[in-house]
Image (cartoon, rainbow, N blue to C red):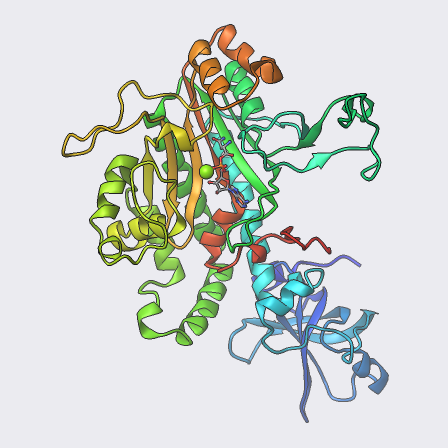
Amino acid sequence: MSYLPIKQLLQTAPASQTVTVKGWVRTKRESKNAVFIAINDGSTIHNIQAVAEPGQLSEETLKLITTGSCLAVEGNLIESLGSGQAVEVKVVNVTVYGTADPEKYPLQPKKHSLEFLREIAHLRPRTNTFSAILRIRHALAFAVHKYFNDNGFYYLNTPIVTASDAEGAGEMFRVTTLDPINPPRTEDGKVDYSQDFFGRETNLTVSGQLEGELGAMALGKIYTFGPTFRAENSNTTRHLAEFWMIEPEMAFFELEDNMNLAEDFVKTVIRYALDHCADDLAFLENRLKEEEKNKKKEEQSDMTLIEKLRFVVDNDFVRLKYTDAIDILLNSKPAKKGQFQYEVAWGIDLQSEHERYLVEKHFKKPVILTNYPRAIKAFYMKQDEEPATNARGEVFGPTVRAMDVLFPGIGEIIGGSQREENLDKLVTRMEEVGIEPEAIWWYLDTRRFGTAPHAGFGLGFERLVLFVTGMGNIRDVIPFPRTPKSAEF
Ligand code: 4AD
Ligand code: MG
């Protein structure tokens, strides 16, 4: 039995044709004159209504049709007299594929909390909220590939299992086939990794960047889009242990080009969602409006979700040096009143409260912060020639050509930089921060043979989905979230 997705059926003009709908029952309502069954198949936020005459379906069949059960309904597509839908299906025949015992099925037609739904991550895609999020997530992923393909980039697959710690931050998950309790040891008592599967220590990738740079030095413009893993113990609404990252890397790009690309890229993919996910975004916008009503007046947002997305797409991002951002923060009300939890001074790694002050209170726009202190950034970033100076001529420490893109409600959504292409400077920096050059000799070969200026960045895909859907917790924008003490499904 062939069938059409509900998304397509709802746009079909009524005619006396017979159609088949297949999907899961959302609600069933029985009245004197008819039985109304709302069915959803995941193709759209909207349900289709199937209408049967009283007595048309046996008592036995009617009992099986409960929220969550799965049906095939054959019938005629007719004009709907009810409000909110153009067409409905006048039932000819119903086949019940699978029942869902109302005593046991956890998704009943009422509002469930997001916390509760996290506990049933295997079923939550059947709710309106999560199906909308997953469709938007799909659209954004498609838009990412489309953007890069349209702009001459090649998709490079970088390894998931690797021996390198791209960020030099040591937040890696080990990959090993050795006995975890009693691993083989060398004479001096150390774990003998030569007996491990790969004959050395390996881990899950924290970033595809280093391999991405190899790609850029051969193909010109590449991007990666794959899972990355971080064993950082940050139980926040913005961190996952397993998240998807998009990392473009471009030969012959400098910091300015990198910023231009990042801004154009992120605006283009958000615009794509606005153009292609209107119904799902409208649903999520209404959901947010309901949530806002429960907030205190001063905490309520002055823009709706779609207004917020349009605002980002239609306005230039602010571009600002780290040193100037510190000045703004030092002169801010919260700094003067001692309201920041972390004190502001040149050299600090900006905390979320600082980033959000700049974006949400000071500029009220996305901000690209650049030229961070060298000491707080990764070893591979290109070093600035001159030390930082502020507007009053005060001189600070060395900086690098880093850029972070900060978004309202999110904080850092993109991190990137121009790369140090000079072999000697790179090796010196690695030695300073304790990374053995021999460990990534293959990476250094890019600087030994035909080195060139190049730059790139990483966009956390879930942070993008978080922003576009207006959700508040990153665990709710990935189908199966992995966080500390949580990997059930
Ligand atoms: O700033 P990060 O650590 O940069 C890199 O990994 C570079 N190698 C990127 C590059 O230049 N190619 O991470 C990049 C982005 C962050 O801005 C953030 O959006 C996201 O990845 N991210 C996370 N998202 C979810 N959970 C986490 N634990 C994340 N850590 C980083
Ligand atoms: Mg970062």
